[in-house]
Length: 237
Image (cartoon, rainbow, N blue to C red; front, side, top):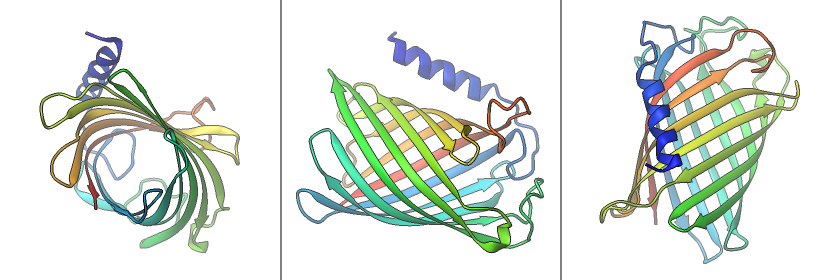
């Protein structure tokens, strides 16, 4: 078994053994289901348009608490670098949150423009992808908090494809650097499989462990852990 395979198996075992007790939305130990749909539309050989939507169900996968809708443009600059500019409208329902730092009992908006530098590379049959994302979080006034600038790094390693359907196992690490406090306040580790050839759609099935602490993961206070099962669909036209 390769080192990458061992890491993916270990991550899956940790997630499978995690506690599944009843939890409120986004409370510590909450299990969630996330689904993400995206369509990429080729404009020219160098330019691609992209639109997407995501939905997240918390409180042990029973309550829709988050949704976002985004659109962007991807520019292919070299074989190994794409640059993407995008805008994302995030909608969050805080009515059931145990954390009362965000007042209100209705959906609130976060306006989220971002600039992404997406690097790709192949080591034999292993694919490497790193997305360096700079994003601005503009909160509605009801949040009662200042806007934030985040640096988000998404690093993925995908193994060789299996079968004619090109099923590839992968592992991904994702962290958010909050520039307001100068610390990483959110980290995600996920593993799953991608189906590389299924008509125009590429499905992805994964499990994820997320750790979050608004004062920073290394602040000494207790982090909040969530466990996610996810199903994504990416369409290419």
